[in-house]
Image (cartoon, rainbow, N blue to C red; front, side, top):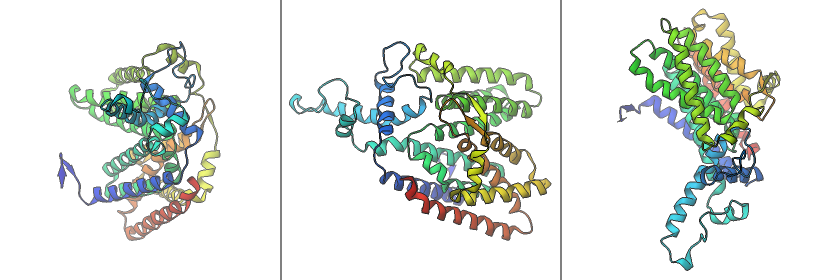
Length: 398
């Protein structure tokens, strides 16, 4: 089958099935959750960002200055705002005495939201589940293009049954958005560097995409955006042979576009936007605690085992030590040992897609050796084990 030149053959069908399993796990957890005060905060602040930003100078919403990223609030509030606009439009078709909304705006208090909106908890989480699916699809697409079908599907299988990823998708937060953005920034930058070997007309759409990815990453977490800028610059300087003089221009345009996206996320209120540069959102430090927890946790045991096997064979096999495998490994090590000290942040979660890309690449190399059947059986066993552990851990997330 082909839809707009998109093939939906066996590899795509397997990938879609895995992503469907991922969505099913997320919805299972959401169905057993209850609305918390944090949910109401994201709903209230997010709706205010879309509908009526605070007119007070220096304050974007009644929640005060947002220092942990506006994107999660906007993503959480958008479905509720759309539902409110749709219901208010339909309400105008009723007789005045039968209308639900008596004023121009619905209240954002918990009581009013509970009675004027339907499926509040599900609507708050659906966008984050969508970004999780988007990140998984991006991981599969990158891994498949670099390493083939087997490597891409193995990486996606570990991703779709990863409890840290599922947990990040079933509650409003900026972490899954920052992971999505940073992964997109890195591989978009690599795509821009390759495009720079061709005519300039092919640069423009990719540079625009890089600017948007950087901007949305910055809206999710400023530290992730700074890391993305540094990684993009280094990778482009390495890959853009003969065009390195243009890399600085490309990065300047991308950063300027990202700044525009950030200002737009604050509804062009410069007084509120200035707080970003006075907060401590970009402060980072080094810690190995997250890495130790990942290696020691039962919920990530299969992922950690796959990573250990991949690392051993990466060190032992020269054929595995190439650019496509080395880049995600280096980025994972860099991110996994970082912690944010100025605001809530989980760089270890941002690092996980890069680790799975590395694992998929090395195992793809192992599938081409004489012992391919042994390694294929090992990969299947690890994927099944991770799936079993994930399903057993679902009740802990609800």
